[in-house]
Image (tube, rainbow, N blue to C red; front, side, top):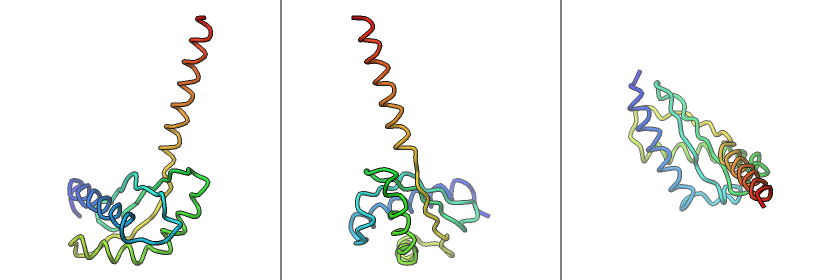
Length: 121
């Protein structure tokens, strides 16, 4: 078992390498406009949970996750070549709703401010 600090360093490195792969290596059109929001690696370095989102939002989530699933073998192989580990973690791709939720909250707050200014007038 490794330390949580090491697992966090591996997670950060996976996030950086995967972001680079999305920009330059992966040509699947299902993965256009996708960004990595977070990577969590368990302490045993057995699994890497990768959280993704897209500009278009949840409408494309199934398509994007399917694109990642079909490319997961290639992605894992490329990451294993870049990151020196005895055994590379299995990749699990998950949709991250946080960016969409944050945008929705921002719009709600903005509408509340608009209502306040309308009442003040």
